Length: 138
Image 1 (tube, rainbow, N blue to C red):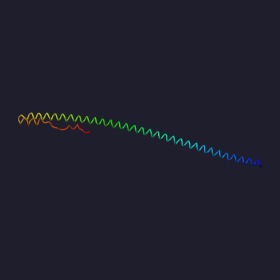
Image 2: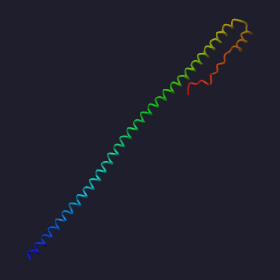
Image 3: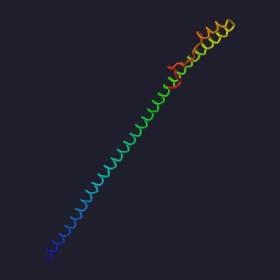
Image 4: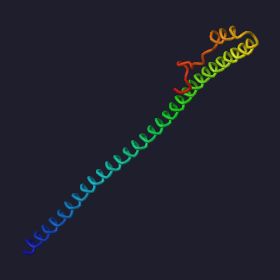
């Protein structure tokens, strides 16, 4: 009888030990899986942060490029405007010179007879008409 009791207690001990080992193996694999999932989540987070940083750098670069382009367009527009204004200024100076010459001629002829003055006034008068092709504004 003592042998049967010994086998029974040995069996209970082995079943208990088996349950403990089984639980430890399950916990190991469960923690291994959760560790793998946590590592994947951390990797994904690092990847997203890197992509975010790269996108911010690209956005910043394009913003700078747009500023350079805008500055170049402004410089070109100002140069074109200055060129048109210079053309208009030359036109105004030439028109003023012609008008001045006309006035000088008219003043010089006023000392002569009235018929000659009327003829020169109508034929030599300079029409002051602005040039439609030249404008200050664009």
